[in-house]
Length: 314
Image (tube, rainbow, N blue to C red; front, top):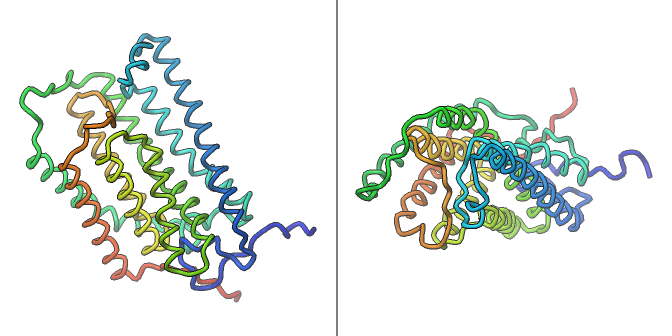
């Protein structure tokens, strides 16, 4: 076997992002191996970092074993940092799996152009940030906190630490989730079906279900929200030919959500148990759909490249 016999060629010209692994030498088992390898690797990395953070918190007295048994685990700076770094490491993990399974250069994970389109990210941010702030204001007015809700313990040194961690690592955390789910898993699933429309449906459903399950919510409203979040990110990857717009929306959502809690001096305690959600979740779901639609419309207006186009040699 020659040194490049195991490598898959790049897809045919005109291939969309989610069909990038549908190459002339396509075999179904590569998608299964890729998804399985990524999930196992991701769980090992995040579990190891989480355990290390909790050991630090226990040793310093920041957390107690009783909090683990009751499920009321607060996001301390150590645990917040471990969670974000664990998700950020999904970027090199997804790249490694792509290279090992398909042998394609890792730069093609970014987009159909083979590079990160920073201008598209900046343009997307100019749209997403004001729209997402408007959504949060509307949500706060429509669903105000109940009277007597604790306002938090004030702005402390720990709040400053959480804010710095959020600013420096949350964009990477959001990007990691996009590279793993929409970058690797979406395209691995999209390689299974030859027909375009069924292939798109499978490519969107598989990562969206895994994204929902990864959040471990026990509330049906939250599960619907996480699934819809995954679907909208898949639509953005499909309609823009890459991960940039989805990363921006994902990062803005997470940073504003965490930022409001931190600046209010409150604990970051992600309670996803049954009964936490409700009809109010229709507001963020509607916001997701509206912002996604606006981004898709502008991407079309900007004539964003959506398909792979080989560069002819000079």
